[in-house]
Image (tube, rainbow, N blue to C red; front, side, top):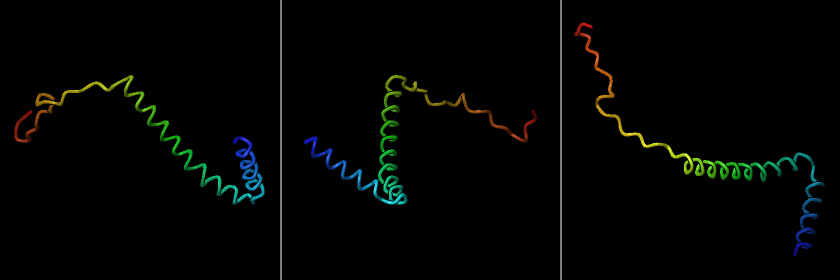
Length: 78
């Protein structure tokens, strides 16, 4: 099983090495860029979930009327 995979990989590697550079670059960007973005999103989600588990955001009560600023009336002297 491993030998078959190694032979297949050697064939892919040889095929890729024989391509012209622009084709190598395009193939690499078409495969590596989405793969890298997917891994980055996965890492982001794992870290985000871990940080919320170990350091939860404290619950803040909703603001009441006492926290509202006083209305300014232009007719009233200061």
